[in-house]
Image (cartoon, rainbow, N blue to C red; front, top):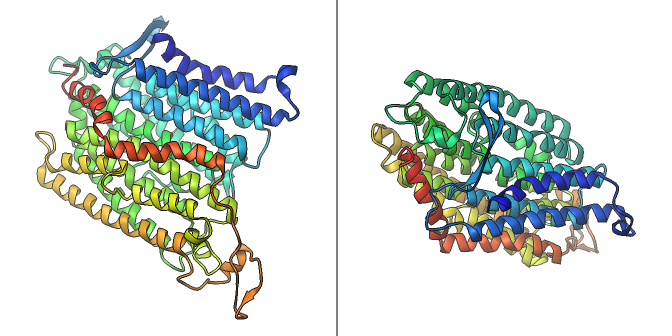
Amino acid sequence: MQLLLAAVVVLPLLGAVAALLPAPPGLKGRDPDQAVLRHGVTVTGVVLAAAVALAVGFDHDHPARMQATTDISWIQALGIRIHLGIDGISLPLLVLTALLTFLCALYSYFHLPAGPSPKAFVALLLVLEAGTLTTFAVLDLVLFFLAFETVLIPMYFLIARWGGAQRTYAAWKFILYTLLGSVVMLLGLLLVGLKSGTFDMVALATDNGPNSQLSHTVQLLAVLAIGIGLAVKAPMWPLHSWLPDAHTAAPTVGSVLLAGVLLKMGTYGFVRIALPVAPDGMHTFAPYLAAFAAVGIVYGSLACLALARRGAKGDLKRLIAYSSVGHMGFVLLGIATMTPTGVNGALFANIAHGLITGLLFFLVGALKDRYGTTDLDQLAGRTGAALYGRAPRFGGLLAFGAIASLGLPGLAGFWGEMLAMFGAFRPAAGLSRPAFLTFMALAGLGTLLTAAYLLIVVRRVCMGGKEPAEDGGAEALGTAGSEESGATRTAPVIPDLARYEYAAWSPLAVLTVLAGLWPAALLGLTDPAVQQLLGGGK
């Protein structure tokens, strides 16, 4: 188990180095570009296999105990150690990261985004995977920060070099927002380590009672500083404005990993560090965190409604990005309740959002490849999408992703949001119940607004033909065939799902259904670990 966890963390880095080296003569093949893309699929596939083996070998009877641990002194003078381990909280995120990265590598093998060298693309993808996996596996505050920051560089270059329109602006906005937040977070992590005498997360989580080395003032400062850095990555309203631009400009696989994995690093930090290490500070700031989360839920939904309305020229990719602000608001609301029910709901919503939004970004990227645009007014015109009639399997899968995203019972999106609101109904002792009931009501309003904009998107994109094309939008898509009645032309023929798209997207759809029908599989892992975490390690 130790070797498996070490392999999961180290193999992507070794694969990234190997991707940049000249391929051996026997492995070059006739197309060196395809050879390096095949290398990316192979490495991410091996990492996924190791992560699945880690999950199979995990002691499911004791998910609250740190397993597969490695604890080696690294910088002895500063007390920094290479401390790795997984429990029921981190294991699902580890497997989700390995799965999404493998699916992105597989999709890119058949459909590489336009840009520079494929070698650089594969290397950056693997470095991104290594940084994310390490974030979920390390148990040292300094290593957590280093891994947390490692992902910024590859994501910046994926957006800046392989992105679409305004990619340079979006990449700089992404890096500046997250780096500024990380500087503040580093100050908070150093404050905790220096005041407590250790950077070890396990030791800090079991020493947070009355005899804690951290005074109430230190905990307040630590949560404020660490929380700002984590909130930027989460993304929490009003620190979210980098997200829509980054998603809109990023290549398809960049959007999938950004939504499916990178956003989870912020919320994971709240659960792994802020809640157990500084509970008094979290208790003070929990109402404010819940308020920002509730506003974010409603704000994200209203922004999506504005983009979805006719004539707004809303971008479908940008709409899905704004939906993440709302969905991650439920995660933050669950964490802010400081109850096992709320935190379990937050962790479940994390996984559900990764599966569902990852699938949606895959689909929207493929829609843009087919039509050359994600402008909703163009897609909904007479010669627009109407996917049910022109590409029924594609349209059906897009409708499934939208229905899952709005939280339909029986699918993964339902459980996390419901548990987060249940946690807000009865928050932890000492928190204002009337305030949290208000936040719960706002979250409930957000679910209604979410259903509204996603059903509008399904009607306009999947059904189409219900409204006239506006401002010549239909013609911008291109037309084929003869004119009908001298007024409109026949819609362009588009391909339905290809085999590689089935292979890359089917696992996400299947897991969305399984998680919705069998939530105990995930909650059985997280609940004991959450109970112990909130109980001060007991």
